[in-house]
Image (cartoon, rainbow, N blue to C red; front, side, top):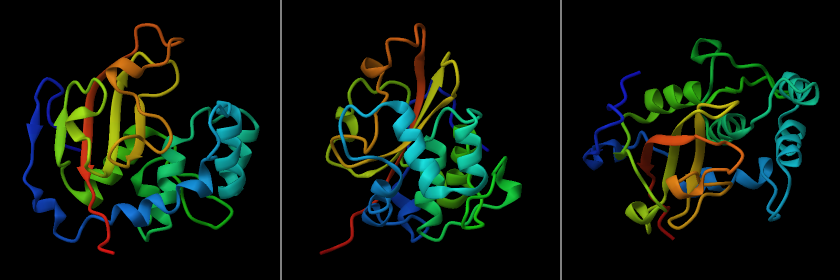
Length: 194
């Protein structure tokens, strides 16, 4: 997987809008299946919602405490529901109750997204609050150093906020002392014409 060096702020042309990319609306329509739409819900409940929806080996691993994060699972679900199939060769991908495979690690879902969608529209090394991408819709991958149990976060961006949680530099969890965003990949996804 070739990703631009974290010290580089680099933009790519919009040539990756050539039909390889899904519409933002198609992906975002599946978020509520795996993420509660209630503010202030605990991480455990968020994880449980994804496990209950996906089922199978995923739910078993959530129930026994093996999986502590669900962002890669949720994005796997969202992508699968839009026809992007994950195979065992894409990384550690246990099966859900539907027989489909789900990636559980951010670095693996990042590789999968790059393979399917091509290079990101923008690669940023610092994004204080989303201002640089405000008004655009798309998919974000945050690469984070020094988190206890994850290497980053993958989410959808609606033009002003993430559907779950954004980890811009000024928005890292307090309990992760020393954690730092080192790179953010952004794929601009167009909305369907209405």
